[in-house]
Length: 201
Image (cartoon, rainbow, N blue to C red; front, side):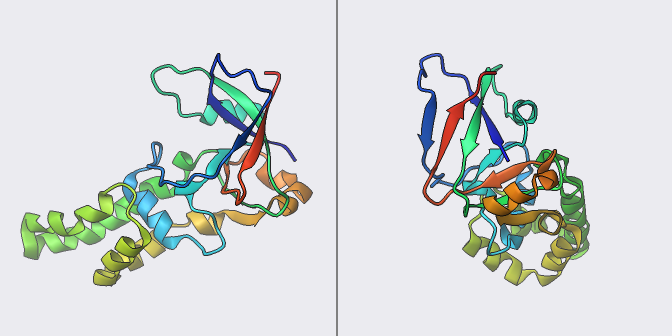
């Protein structure tokens, strides 16, 4: 089972391989609404790596290039990823997270629930629920927020299926059943970093 990443091309990079350290700081999502990212982080199973600290990969070079987040017309090149056999990976049910049905369902469900407060609290309600729409809320802030609004949490639980749809497994398990990741977005947080090797593409 091979995994590939597309990274911005660097003409000065002549090495055939790279050692990549883990992502220590939180990554703010570019292709997923902040409110959806916050809900996914709150609902994340204990065994699953956080998307905010993960690296993303694809089962084919073509899909890796397609999913690359291009900015300012940047050119990308594909590298093959070497993971430890016991590293945990998440196989999404879609080829890119922005295609998951949660992207539309979660915000719609939350807005419907928040709308019930408008009749009694007017536009002051915006201040109460604004934190949920901020980028990268940490686990403690999310837990505190949802503790104050159990009905809103129930709406999020009912609307979101991202983690139910995903597969959480080791790279060994994925290598034994590569067909489950045939056209999927894959993400991981290698405990000891990982190596990438330049492909011929």
